[in-house]
Length: 347
Image 1 (spheres, one colour):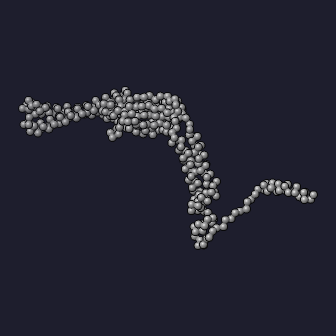
Image 2 (cartoon, rainbow, N blue to C red; image 1 turned 180 degrees about the vertical axis):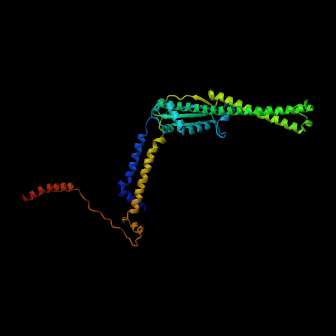
Image 3 (tube, helix red, strand yellow; image 1 turned 90 degrees about the vertical axis):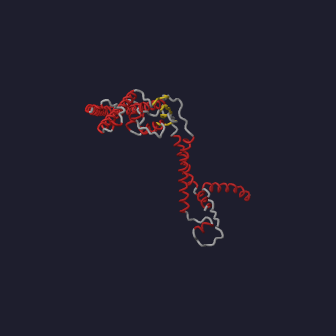
């Protein structure tokens, strides 16, 4: 079988090797088309784990991931939203042109990388250095503004909610205190009792124990709501200024040197072109092998299933087909050589 395969490849060498050559040529064309000059720049952001005082209660934070990974994932998810990407494009170019960048191009050219536990790199690439710089700045500014806006909105809603609940809790606490004071007024023997630490004999009075427990529960509930209301006010104040969780460490600089293409990026088009060419050539060889029924080797008779004893196959050498102009030239030369000899015989 190996000899037959080699014989097929040699006999149809142009048909077999043409796809390989074409595949390499296409790979070279793809490589030359993708060698456009790109510039890249990045900004460094320091991320802290949110606390209650910095709006941690109003942020969706995965405690099993590092602060940097949390923010990098959030930035990547936001970039997949058309509304966020459109606002970034608006920041890059307020006129709406955005230097020829569309939403899909923006998503392909912007990257978020978590470096360690607290650092996030926001990178962008572009054919224009100024566009790369403005893209990174627009992404960082839009995300920071959105982050502060979310904390501010949630803190404002929480503040309004806790303020309303405080009013209700304060009324309940005042009602419970008034009921307890009225009961003490109706029972003068309890007037000298220390309500903070009453004796056990007084606690046997079920009505007194119930009223005192209701007052303590109302006071504790009012205190919890008051703490949460204070936290929402602190978070609201923090959201109005620079966020304590996000700190821009390095501003995006203007790139001066283009990106260097890696060896892998340069070889990939050639490898793909060669792979496609080899696949097509292999399919051609397989098809020729399956369709060829000629007997060229003694093994072919066995492969065909013919029960015929074989001593050897005759080697047929076809007569060479000389070109017509070569035959005419040879005839003319032979005639010219013989002519002097004939004249000599006549003399």
